[in-house]
Figure 1 (tube, rainbow, N blue to C red):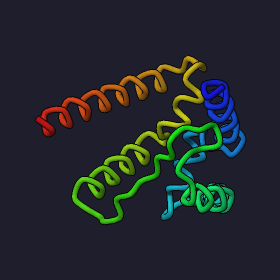
Figure 2: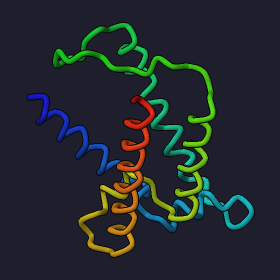
Figure 3: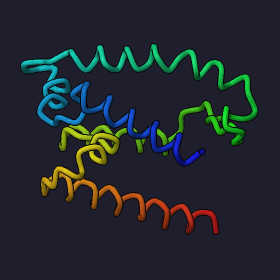
Length: 139
């Protein structure tokens, strides 16, 4: 049941990304182009997403387990540090260069566009590098 719910949630998320235009690199780059012809429509998408998520997140903070009985795993760290700021900067720079981020990239991976395939391969390489560095740091 958990895997089915996870699949359906991912499917709903992916469809939302597609409908909102988050999987269209040109639209994302137009949103990020504050000095040019700025397209503010994705700001409305983000505000709507925050509004929709606020209630369930508040509710989740009061629970120890999810509706399906899995342990609730919410972030507990609150302070800003070098790693968080550096990771945010890398993510933002990559988003600005490519016009796409990991969620939409996975959602449009099956289109077969070579640019998306290269992006996902680079993303997976980055994840592997992070895992290797974290393993090394832990030991």
